[in-house]
Length: 123
Image (cartoon, rainbow, N blue to C red):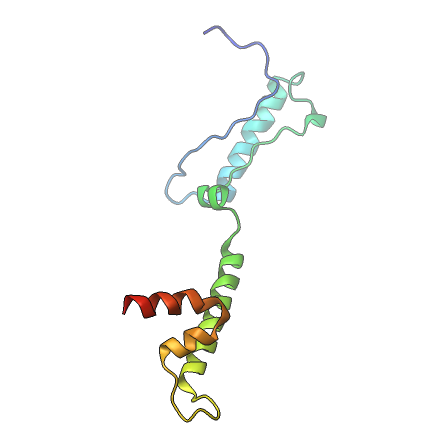
């Protein structure tokens, strides 16, 4: 391959590993120094108004994104539903005179009907 003469329309995802003890902030400072050198060496390709930049982002954040909070909210909602089912199971139904079983609890939970039917047919 010959030497590249154009440096436009560049869009890369570059992966690398930081040396032990190097923080993302330190790596970003080094990359910023490299970008400043590129802008100085090739001002016609990287003018100040071009917005050219390189960002250092941890791989986990790049691939997964910021899903920690939504997952914790989902976990809390599922836990709350399970607590409701357990409460229904532990407290006798008013007026029936019997202690409900797990199958009764599942049949009362609207979203658990398929599970109750499945456990009834498997048992």
